[in-house]
Structures are given as structure tokens and as C-alpha cells.
Image 1 (cartoon, chains in turn orange, cyan):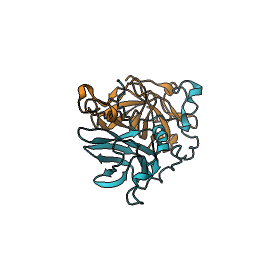
Image 2 (spheres, rainbow over the protein chains, first blue to last red):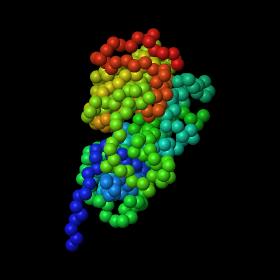
Image 3 (cartoon, helix red, strand yellow):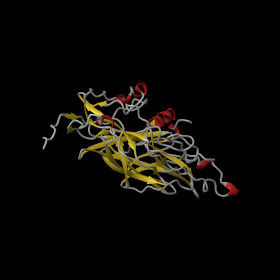
Image 4 (cartoon, each protein chain N blue to C red):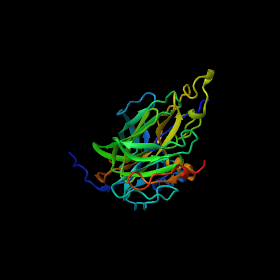
Length: 169
Length: 177
């Protein structure tokens, strides 16, 4: 039985990581507390040794969600990355931020602010009441970033091709 | 109109941190490892506003209210667990330094809107109090936005102190849109 590899490296607190969201998310369908799959999109090395491999999977969580409303209120979707699982070790994450490809609406804008207040609904009804705000839709594969929430000691990645290991969604 | 009120979270923001700065040149992000042993970048001001990062071990939330004719003369209160954090007329912002963790903020006018944020140490979040029409009055909702959006709004904003840290804002102090 081969000996377990020695811990080689410490990844510092705050180390940035690139992530990929593995499933579609929507302010229309998600619930608060829902968990979703993420994976590492870019390996992390320490002194030339890869310790976190691209493809390592992890978990994110929906912190807050609200569907778009009928008075022009836009949807809300607040997400957090919790951890990446690296060979059974949970690498805790914080400071989750979605990359630019995360919005599928036509204008591809991260933020379009209020319009309901100045819009007039059809048929002369009360202004704004029938104006429905946009949902937040994040497609599978959307890129994101996060940081390590604490320093962690890890073994070097096991396989030679581990720098670009892929897992299925 | 297909583009209505689309609001995305401050935690859903474009990021181009120093560690990723060379990715566009290298082509594939996945092909190049993040070097965790490289010295960390020094703390930079949070945005173009030169707002400093939060104190060590703390996070901060910047609440702002874009200037808007609707409700411009009425102030709104931002609260957490019933405690007032600050109140704003249109065209103001304040900074709330807070402990890391999940925070639940509210704003009330015709209805009450809530926003939960995961605040992490060393991070700054931006929340816009946006007005939209209600059934009788107007309503406000708390919308997390990204730093670029806040920076864009900033030219129409004036800073105020959070509740308990200074004087209340005066309506006349609000800059014109």
C-alpha cells in the first residue's frame, strides 16, 4: 500500500479561484437555501505544484431570491460559493462573484434599473402595475470567481494531467 | 418591451482581479494555474470613488439611492432586524461596516422589501434602493449591484453618515440627476 502523499503546500487565505456554475439558475425557480454545483475552472498551484485541479467540484448556495414582480420590480438572486471538494478536503470559499457571461437576457447587462415607475400599463390601468420586472437567469457554464476563506494545507495533485481534469456536470 | 427591471446581485459582479489579469492574453483560463504562492496584491480602494476597503475582519455594504423624481422628497430608512442603519433622500449613499455573515436588510414604503446578503471579510457590496411604482404609492426595493454600476451612479450621489454617525441629510443636498 503506497504511503499517503505528504502535505506540500499551504494555499493562503484570500487566494482567488475561477469557478464555473454547473447548472442553470433562475430567480423564478430557485428557493432560498438551494444548493448548486460549481467546479474549479482553473487550477491553483503553490510554488509550481498544482494543488487544486480544474474540474474539482463543489457547492454553492442561494442566499436570497425573489422573482420579478408585477410592478416593475426585477428579480433578485444572491449566490454564495461554499466550498470546493479536493480529494475529500473541503476548501472553503467566500467573496463569490459571477463573471460577465452570467446573464442571458437580451441586453446582457448585469444591472438595468427601475422602469416601472415611469411606464404606463396597457388599457389605462394604474401605471406600473402590469409592468413585470425581468428575471435573473444564469446559464450552466457561467463563470464566476471566489476566494479561499481560510488558509489550507493540501497535497499536490495526484495525476500528471490533473491540471485540467474535467468532471461531468 | 423585453427589458424591464433586471437587477443582479452585488455578489454577481464582473471581476477582473489582479490574479486573473493575464488571462485574456493567454487565451485559456483553464490552461494556466493561479499561483497561490505569489505575493498578494495590496488592498486597493474599493472603487473609483476611492472608498477604502473595510477594516480587517469586517465587510462593508454601501447603500445608495439613485436620484429619481418619484419620491424624491421622501426619505427612506434602511434597517436590519428593526434597527435603523441609515436614511436617505434621493441622490445619497452611506457605508455600513459590518461583521461577516448573512445580513437581512429591509426598506419600507408602500410595501417592505428585504435583501439577504452574504457579507465576507474584506469585501464591499453595493445595494441600490430603487423606486418603482406601486398600487397607490411608490415602492422601493433593495437591489444588489456591481461596483461598476455604483461607480456610474456616483456622480449623482453625495455621501452621508450612517445613522448614529452624523447628521441627517437634507433634501436640498441631493444633487440633480
